[in-house]
Length: 293
View 1 (cartoon, helix red, strand yellow):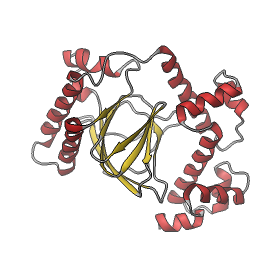
View 2 (cartoon, helix red, strand yellow; view 1 turned 30 degrees about the vertical axis):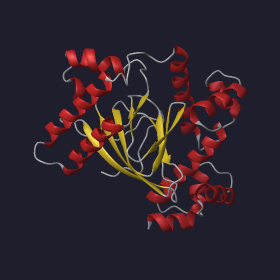
View 3 (tube, one colour; view 1 turned 60 degrees about the horizontal axis):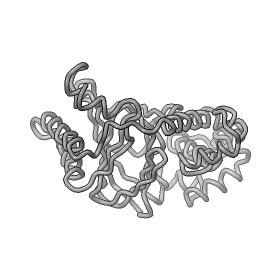
């Protein structure tokens, strides 16, 4: 299943249903193209995620850390951790993303597997990610291929592969039971609050004073903190978010460029077109025609 555009709630939780209650694991084969400004936006989900880069190079941000994953490398992203991805200076990157409900690894609630080998590593703000290389990365790839090809008994094979992968990660001490520092836990929750505020009010005029007051910081500290966690200033993020929302409307509606500019928070259509072209390299009209018709 391809997944180039994901739906997220205003608090950044991904809304996609991953797999089913009977088999809670899902594979997404994702293509990220530089020329159309593809990205997986900042989000989180209750599932754990395993990533494998099939080709190209992908820039991942997990919390405040930026990682560059090359072809043949992988990544484990823990539950409830903010993360995003985009191609890293290559025309196209291809990756597998496996989203797995932890209950598939631990079995029923109260089991020894859940209590000893799953919950301690994913709950209460545990380490947010692990870079996977070598055999661990190849296991993610082979598991993805099982889900893609769906041979006889593939569910059992996927389950065994995921258990083996999880055991190897724990045995090699790739993931520990240590929690993040309390200050980092506060930072992550504060970042979610700031992003939630922007997402709820992006169609309105937002000032740094508004955002800082919302999270009880000074304007200077608010700006420094946001840039540290998200990688850009609040107003650059707001601009990019408005542009991405406009791209969704270009794709999913027949609204005029003028209407899209007004409904996504731009003061004038000329400013919208100018910023859209700077962001994508195309005018909104050309972008819609090139990629969505």
